Length: 153
Image 1 (spheres, rainbow, N blue to C red):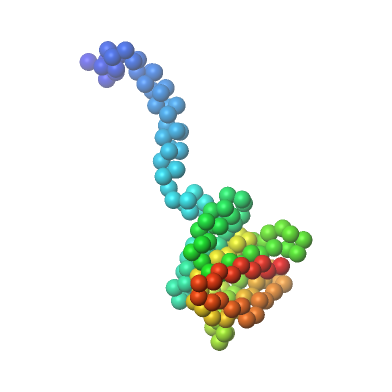
Image 2: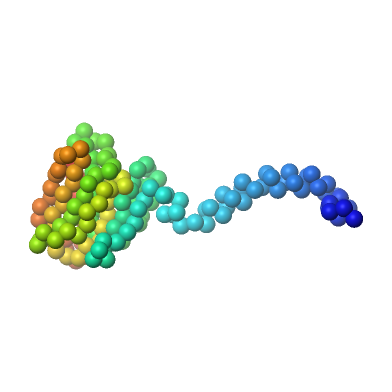
């Protein structure tokens, strides 16, 4: 008995089965990928924790990433956006957040124009650097239960 005899006996030639499999394989792969989490589908979004354990998220290059970050951003109490005064968003921004005592909470380079972080109530200093130009937000007050959004130009 040849390997494909049973297939032929059921009315489906082996080559038709092979063609069907070849045509369905890409569809099967797409279906498997769609089961991944939204963050796995957006590799430009980076999530992490500071040394103190404060969760953060950085990214937002493209509309799809920004839409996803907007949904996920509800878990954070501070959203920072980086843009030129003329309007275009900026990525790769050097970012430092310090507490009132000057202790560094995070020092990173953003993975896009949006940066979210969950911080405890308190007063913070934000320093954003692009092309050697540093802008600061001093005395940024975060209160319990409040979400704040700031744009740094």
